[in-house]
Image (cartoon, rainbow, N blue to C red; front, side):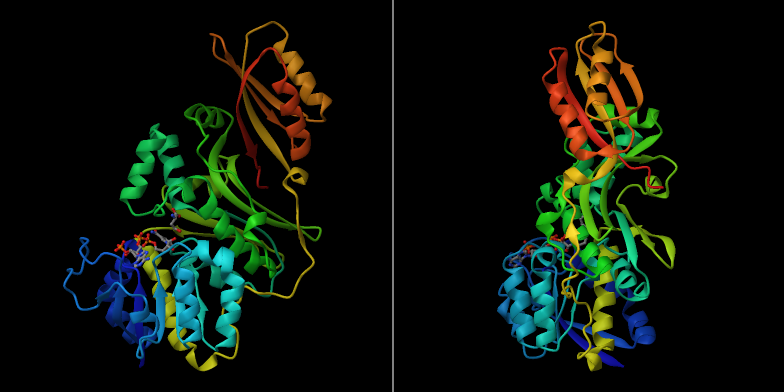
Length: 429
Ligand code: NAP
Ligand code: HSE
């Protein structure tokens, strides 16, 4: 039996999930994994908050140094989130010879390369399975189990909060605000939910997936990002009519030596397996040149699913303690020479909803403008009888640059009231 003494930095949704999981499955971990985990200290900022352990519990501290420099703690589990002081805590822990397990994708997307190098230098482990897709063990699968493949694409629904919101809006016609509140109550959302809504959280996760999948360092700053804040109930309704579902997709592709990385609301065919991923569930769809297509599916957020990935890492740290000379989870790679594709050079189909004055010939003039920019249309629908009317266009696959030029030209037309929505469409075939 191996013993692993840990300190928890943070005792919120996930931290308390870890405690609950230890209580629930302690015997399982001991008998089958051969690891006995003991929590020696817990960091919070306010001990008086209502939690599963009462405020007079001697494990609590409000000083991170009590954990990071604790003589008996072997593994620091960082579940506080944010950049500071988490960044400083992890650096100090690694330098002090402690292993670190974290769920902090925001921190890893920005400082992961430096931190994994630091872990190697100090011959300790840094693991972060819970940072992408909560309970789904997708990072280890991509890094280890698929290492005999060249991975061509990774497409994920990796943010539970936005998937929950879009599902409620699609299935029940809920308002954006009500659905967001419900997601927050379930503990899915980040401390600041704009990280979820505006696609930052998915972009952080995509940075880690692309680095591990394409074995190259990629910069979070180069991920193109759009959130779901502009998706209206009308777009959801029209998507249904056209046979699509709207999802916030995180897309990484490696094509002709270039990498494409983008996060944006996307219309996908209603029959595609990703379209059936609802509520706070996540899925990551991977194509490898040997394995073919794979889809990893499960709970991407919430206390126990995330704690499952955190504790899996803690157990792996214990099991690999003797092999620390081999890099465990690097995010630093030799330069691959692969450049990130500029967004205006990417190609997708588009859904465009315009509000226009109902004047004879308006449809024809707009169609001609699209054609003039080299944008070919696959369908057109007119909606509404009172002015302004909605014109919905779906294009064939086209360069982003051409579409932007067409929208710019349409913006100058007198008949236009508003460009209400532009949403990319992926057939995913
Ligand atoms: P949370 O509920 O907000 O909990 C954060 C905890 O950290 C709280 O106990 C808080 O203490 C403590 N904390 C934060 N800053 C601190 C500081 N400066 N000093 C002392 N204590 C501090 O967050 P969470 O949802 O558990 O998320 C934790 C991490 O897991 C984040 O990186 C998040 O992105 C990641 N994650 C979350 C989920 C999820 O479903 N929630 C899933 C996957 C990954 P107080 O309670 O006293 O304020
Ligand atoms: N806020 C994140 C989400 C938590 O909604 O997916 C899991 O990383």
